[in-house]
Length: 579
Image (cartoon, rainbow, N blue to C red; front, top):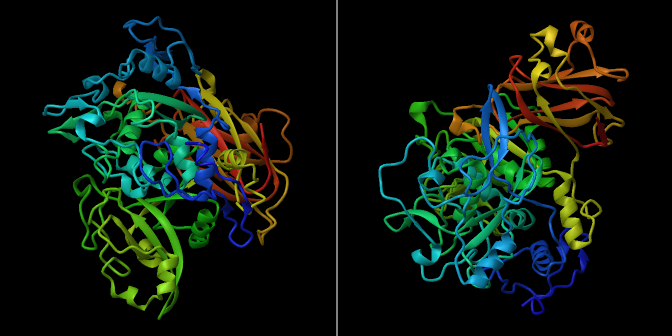
């Protein structure tokens, strides 16, 4: 199969920057699917992964338990078949003998002619719920028990493959739909070396970004069903199973399915890309929002949006056909020539994947499309169907939506594509961020709280950031910097009643940094930038335009004495050093 599917890399199209390759065209890959309509980059990536020429740097998932000794959180590795593991502190768990290796487990099952059953995520209520179960009979079934011809992927992955079930995880649906737009993102999460045909043993694996590193999550393919139908995420094609299996792997990563109820698209986007997500209040937008969005699409950013809703309005429909409190993904942007001039249009996707769509200007039934040229429609790949995806003007988008999330992809994505294809993505015209990452902990004295608590604030962790030069494309000689603080393990702690801490950060400009800043400094100097608020989200983010210089970042909880692990990330469009 690999011989027949061999592709020769030809180079970069100087007009479009697109990779030219895959001269064999669209062939059948060993994905348990049929003809897959892959991009050129996707074909090259698949060739290298399937042939073994490229292997990702990933660790096995180590299931961990959380325990409390004398009110102190202890992170423990999970050992199957040992109901009472010995408590031992491991703040940064690493792989152990308990971790499952996909290839070893698959080989073992093939040799014994058995189907894999996951000892870490059994087919029972413990994998579904942590509070109370739903009042109905749930039966776990493998795809082969549901359909005659199960496939992992049919006709190529698509944003239309992701349809929400009965679990309140539309935020996860929106993230999963977004990665289908980019082969290099999709096949990073859904490895192509598995199928329902070749070497099928009831075992699959998925890879997620988990607090700074990629982990390989191994599962069996038993899925929760009711009345013979999948209970949760599913595909429009009844015999396609990549999306429900991905959801199961993500549920295992966080403890069980119920732990996935409620979240933000940013969480899903980050865990499937390793990117850094920003929140934008569309009722108080930055002045350059439209330019920022077009620049984001240039840099391969992913976008989500939503309409605020009170508890009584959750998932209520507006007169215009939109759903309140629901996570949408923005899948495209175009400038379109109309009778009224050139206007920006946005393509938006409802992960329900049904006829519940926007019904205003530029909707599927809008007469405005009659005045757009056939060439422009072809350029936009315009499809007017009741499929959950629709177009609307930027003006209407700003009027009806309240929040937007932007997931900025880090340089590691482009580095991986470069390694797979042998072509530098930056030299090919693809733009990317410079990034720095630091792991830290608020513990004991270092849990100093916010600046309101001056006596303890200086004991928080401090990080020095140096911006050595200005952005050459910035008319004001400034640099764009995105700073994010992410708190670890909070979703995993939901079953124990532990919620997110209120976190934030402050940025101080200094002439020189020769050691920690003390109380006297903070008593007499104001921050030059800070997070918009201290808030109980997994991650708080801020985008700033700063002059070249030396800065000190102080991440903290709002109240002193609140302990936890965190990760600080810095993205900049110029070279940035930090320590």
